[in-house]
Length: 521
Ligand code: HXC
Image 1: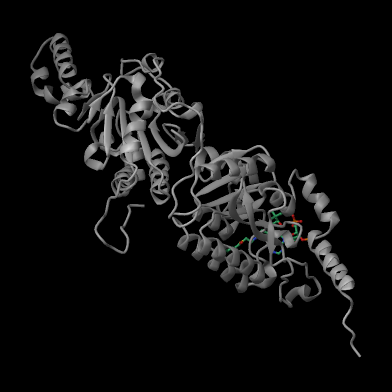
Image 2 (image 1 turned 120 degrees about the vertical axis):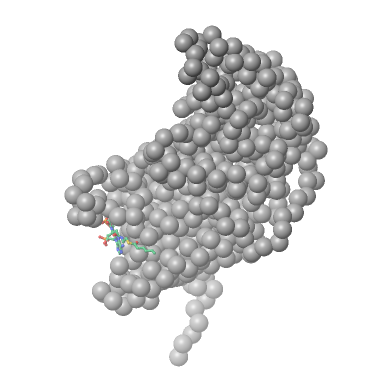
């Protein structure tokens, strides 16, 4: 006869099961994980969540595969730790791949666990953090594993713009597995030789193209942070990646129905900064670092730059102004003269769409000579990529404030959120130059025929350039027509942005009803 054990015994059994689950693939594999400079799935979870707040979900799930002897090899949790808890006091959901169990490979039940917490997060409106460290599709589970990925990709897409999704790459991430992180809003990659992202690995590359390349050269953190733009942030360690995640979350609302969190930064909203007057040279050809302007305007000089190492000709990132999160988009004259090219357009437009989805105002600082000329850019599709900037700004209904610091020429003037593109407030510094072309190029085109007939056209050209500059190399033609709302002194940039944002606090703007637009991608 079966006699139910006492409660003490049942509790002891439960505790024993939990201890087993916590060991993942066993001590030997945990040792190997540490030897590679990686934390375990559970150590990462512990670092992410406020102490004592994490609630694990599906700790006892196991796979149900019988192929390749897997019926004899089961691990509680099936290779992924999932659940929810508080990060700096706010609700967050997370999944953390356990590389010690089948190399963190994803099978049917593993996938179901991830999908379950993604659905929960979307239902209650909380961010999803994914810590990736996986050999990809679990080979023994075949198509069930591929479909499990499909369920995740589908939800990455459904919940895009509903709750923030952040991916940490903390180990291998290969094949189709890279697409879930790629579908999320931000990718933070650890710079560790055991960490990489690629569609096809070095062996396949060699077989297909003859090219020899290492894992790191092909898809390491530095490559993705500087060349492909796949990684928004690079971290030296798992610990730093998790710290970056917490910082990033601090700027974001929990979902698209919320405003971003308010933080009492203590920085006076009416603070003026006379130093701003000496940072930007009035000579439009002279470079300066636009971050020197940004940090003087935002609260406590705290600027959380995104994509800092990729497409550096445009600078994007989060900051707070009067305690509220803002997104900054700025040309960077210190890098390629701040010209807009394919990568810069992709970088900025995606960020603007993120800001718009999550109710974060966009502050745009302009000093742009134009779009990048040349066959490389034209043949690469600069028209299509460049138009994403126009699309993203025009589509965005969040408060949009533009400050023209210096050059704003031609199509790039519009692409940096001019009045007609939907800027709510446009300020210009007295150093602003707003025109169809720069003076030299404009005179060359206007007087090409006349100059050909002249023996020594130098003086004539000089005079015409001076005339052009007198007329257009200032903000006043634009201000006369109301395309600049106010010409401001550099020192008052911060208080003027604060006033604009206060005015725009209850902004409501509608677009024509539709299923969705068709962004040029
Ligand atoms: C099942 C796997 C696995 C996988 C690794 N393991 N990948 N088990 N399915 N995909 C297991 C190994 O058998 C091993 O088990 C343990 O995980 C650790 O693997 P190692 O090879 O010993 O580790 P390491 O030397 O660090 O190499 C890690 C690795 C390598 C680079 C990830 O394991 C690897 O290349 N794995 C295969 C990667 C891959 O091709 N995946 C499919 C990609 S295609 P034991 O028992 O020894 O600990 C894909 C399609 C997705 O993912 C499609 C979505 C649409």
